[in-house]
Image (cartoon, rainbow, N blue to C red; front, side, top):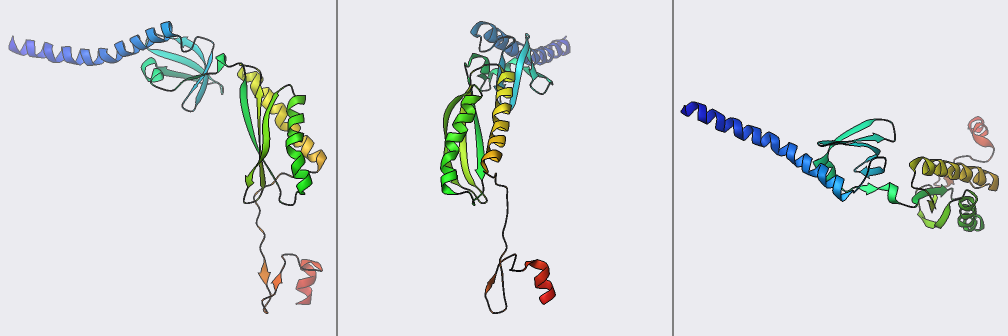
Length: 210
């Protein structure tokens, strides 16, 4: 009898520990239902995950990621995270970082914010700000902030796509060159005089002369 009682006691503790997680998720589900931090069909993000809520269960919540995968997370774990509900936003903000080459003329660089503003407004978005932000290793850097007036991710995705390609097209038409990582190597002659990478007469002429 003593052994049976001891076994039941140990079994009860094990069942209690197992049930603790179940009840924790159950209470978390009730919190989601009554507090409504998000609802079925709304798009949320936590950590590095963005997805649309498909089902709120008693133990877990199922989301559909923007890349198509089904994501299952326990209700307790989900509520312990910082959740951003995109559906309740009337707009979505996007930032583009743009770098142009150092050979860009100052007058052309001054025109860039106005060019970007026109592109944004021509594509039915709201221009927020744009301007010079710093000198990079290989580029003169600008930033562009704009809002797309929708809470739907697909609309925002399409708007960002259109504006990005419009920037590419307009910069090509205006002769503004995007920068990419480059290095220029200078060499010196035996007398210490600096020699440019491409001496007068071209590389082949220099070789034949030597």
